[in-house]
Image 1 (spheres, rainbow, N blue to C red):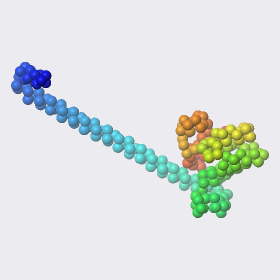
Image 2: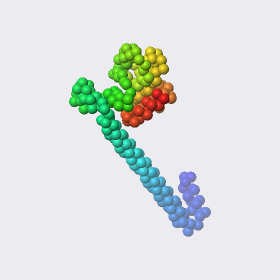
Image 3: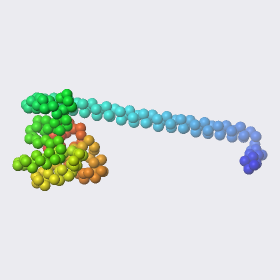
Length: 212
């Protein structure tokens, strides 16, 4: 009843010629609001598509760069004086995927480091690493260890070996980023860290940085 009374009051107080004008104004406002909504929707959709396109292009560039680095690493490794024989020994050992075609990260890292002129000791488990260090009387300058391992984490292994070899430098590696590792409280911020997968140049640069 209140709405009907208000409409009747408006009709009584408003000249009849203003009613079509008033209706036209409301129609224009509604039409304008709909047009504004469509324009804003299209604009936001276009911006979202541009962002997705930019992300896709960035990922493609990253993949291309990563592939180029791997090819460069392979070429560099094969130019080394020992690389061919080292790869042949690895294939003959049968420690790959059964076909001798895929190098493990441990073996690939060893080949990279030896090609850079470093002497290495490699261990597949923390227990094996502790045994090798205990049996090695000479100075060990650097330990490179994964952060997450089955028997113990890299932080505990590093602490244990550092007690056996005072002055030992530590370089951690993981498929997770340093921020994620720090957030999980596995490692404190600021430790030396390299993300997997890494190129030979990235590994070489990080090792030189840690050794000083």
